[in-house]
Image 1 (cartoon, helix red, strand yellow):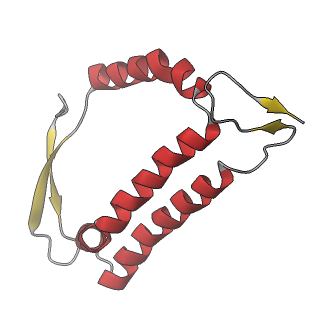
Image 2 (spheres, rainbow, N blue to C red):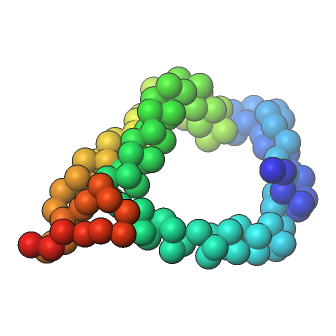
Image 3 (cartoon, rainbow, N blue to C red):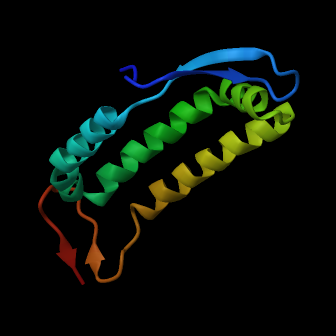
Length: 122
């Protein structure tokens, strides 16, 4: 979905040449996003931690599969060397891996369950 706001040109910090045109969102786009979040908040909260962790794991896998291209994009947009762009993507991957692992740990006195709407209490 494309935003309804203004268009800006992104330029390379290296040589000030245009690299992309970006369409921003406007207030109605923000309102739509917040409304969608509110409509789905309860469903997400009722999703068992291991299932939420699986979604985050899949995000990490998508980042892993596109690491080089995303690292190049970061390098181009920010003016970093390629290895630093790749390193930033790797940080996101590492956070996804950590969150996935934590989704299977005991969070205090409530034990994550595979069954929706069910919890095991210590």
